[in-house]
Image 1 (cartoon, helix red, strand yellow):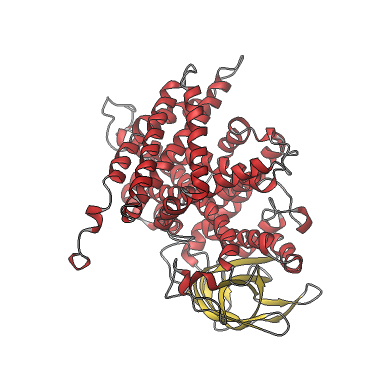
Image 2: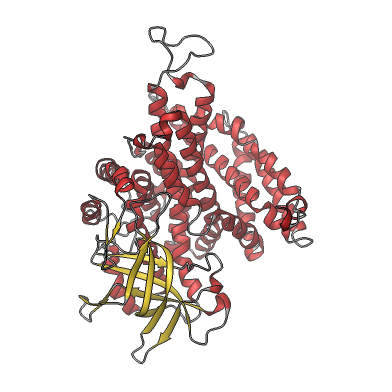
Amino acid sequence: MPTYKAPVEDFRFLLNDVFHVDSHTELPGYSDLTPELIDATLAEAAKLCEHVLAPLNRVGDTEGCTRHDDASVTTPKGFKEAFKQFSDGGWGSICFPAEFGGQGLPVALAGVITEFLAGSNLAFWMYPGLTQGAVAALLSHGTPQLKATYLPNLIACKWTGTMNLTESHCGTDLGMLRTKAKPQADGTYRITGTKIFISAGEHDMAENIVHLVLARLEGAPAGVKGISLFVVPKFLPKADGTLGARNTVSCGSIEHKMGIHGNSTCVMNFDNATGWLVGAPNRGLNAMFTMMNHERLGVGTHGIGMSEVAYQNAVAYAKDRIQGRSLSGKKFPDKPADPIIVHPDVRRMLLTMRANTEASRALIVWTGLRYDIATRSPDEKAREQAEDHMGLMTPIIKGCCTDIGLSSAVMGQQIWGGHGYVAENGMEQFVRDARINQIYEGANGIQALDLVGRKLGMNGGRAVQSFFSEVGAYLKAQSKVQGMAEYANPVALSLGHLQQATQWLAKNAATNPENVGAGSYDYMNLFGLVGQGYMWCRMVEAANGKLSAPGAAPNPHLSAKLVTARFFVQRMLPETSTQLARISSGAETMMSLPAEAF
């Protein structure tokens, strides 16, 4: 049976020592964020995830969800009770406004809890996780009446939320959707259509389920310009806020999936269901993208949660499993063989998992802090810069971090060997569960296209140039600091590769647009590696500062940071030169083979 331990110490280091959250007291929610509050919050979240949710992970996988003849759905044993503990503990309300029942704490802190939840039980977390995206959309685009009706119950987790985009004939290309919305005299709309792949679409854990649905108004323009967003609850709220009649929305079936069996992924049927418009008519994608961008950052965090739990269980096995002898001589002569952790190839996999996980975790915390600045800072210029950062980093975090989640799960399974292929040990579940993160909320190839095709050129390239300036100035300064050059200089070299790739794409996209598509995935990963390298330098700087402080005691956690960072810059970061070469080769070899030749 796999185990999970929340990485509390690592997050404490990031929040307090690397990003100094206590220096942002000008932001609402940060003035009370003391180290003591951080410790208490992380400790309580760890208890829930380690002792309640992690033991249910395999239960959810083996039992799955059950749809009944009345279209209701039962979740796996223990999920309903665990959801009550989650909601009673206020874990769904951490970062939302106090006026609607939230705690008003930073999104950066909520992101920490998201990793704990995803690492311990991804299928469970998706029920309240989708709810948080629905809250974000209604906060930004809902009318005062919609906010008053829905937000307190969603934030309290009395109700849960979903997002309904995909239809059987269209996924990413939402301009083809067919679900219809017909206006009524009372200001409501009648929604008719079928959506597929709806996570948490029907279940037994909350009083009500609030669906955010993309549909097309009668006479609306064709394509994405004619899409509107509607809130369509399972039960219609009465004027006093209590639940009224059942709406005509139902679960047609549950998808049979590769993984996340504990989450009810549904086909949802809307049969003249009553809904309310969210935002302006024909501007539904603007409102839905508020939810989707929130979810994309969350899904990137899911990837790192999966990477962490796979790493933990791979380490435990590598220390316990004896097989062969060390190449440099017996390490445990009293045993018939050495533990496999002595073997370089096993360490290669473990250090790759660790280096990817810890750097990506820092990238997510850094971006969570920028999210808080973008939404809470009184400084208009700071908000603009933070919004630029968010737009740039969202596809990178979603794409790169979910790729890391799967690669770590596969490496963890490989370390277990044949035992990792056997279901009872849980490693193959991590592989199956991690796979979905690369697909939903916009497949990773779409994230790469979004980055190269949209985000680089926005506002005249202001966001990417700001990133280049910040990272370049930092690396130049750190290269002159004792003990930092061995980390800063390789990252500076890779930053140069990223800048060359950016210039190549800018120059060659106009001559052949296929060059953008051909190079986008490599570009996303190149950007991700440079971002990770920057984070490693920031972490090494903080670790060196603590380790060299007068009277500092030995700290294995911080010393391990230095070793892992060296592994990253020596063994992983050189990949940027290969990525630059692939990008610069253009689209010719990719696009010249006729379709019939495949």
